[in-house]
Length: 143
Image 1 (cartoon, rainbow, N blue to C red):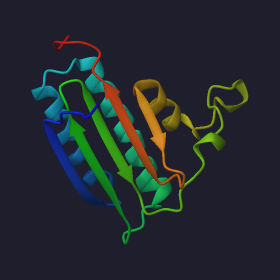
Image 2: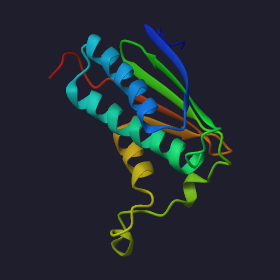
Image 3: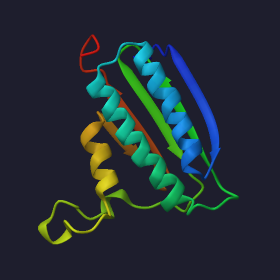
């Protein structure tokens, strides 16, 4: 079944958190305009911020000569975000579980865990430098 996207956005941004924040703000504004529930908007905000931090800091290593591509699509019932960095990628299955008692004091892996917890779908490319995040709308209204 093909998705009916009512809004699309494509950006190529520098490896800079402020540029990423502008893209996230634009996306969240669209979700607000479509009357998404605040809990869903929060989920998207958190997951996309984590994915952008991973792309900018871990993927591109803040390199000024590298960029991040961010594509966003919003339908009445789904939001889809694709983020691609120019880094060498990683194996998401090798990220340690940050909820294990011996790892609670370490920050590694929390972003990946949060993305998976807050989104309906998180899928990485085989190379590990491209992620697709999808969130299905939980219900009507802005509760």
